[in-house]
Length: 92
Image (cartoon, one colour):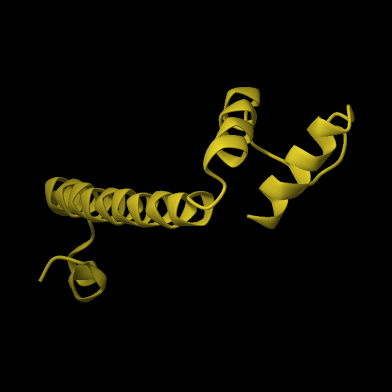
């Protein structure tokens, strides 16, 4: 949240927040966060928590799907592996 606050500070003082290496949000997100902070500043920390939880759920699901895909790929390729490699496979 500190980086967003710094990005908003720079924008409000007519300094490009993208000139440095601090702020990495899109201009649309910068304007949205500026509007949120101007109208609902007390909600902004909670909004970040909600976004973090949603991102954690999405990343977790992506990890599970990637694991399933890798197991399926390994299962399909198993006939082409050397016979002594069985103990190091994820498939058991």
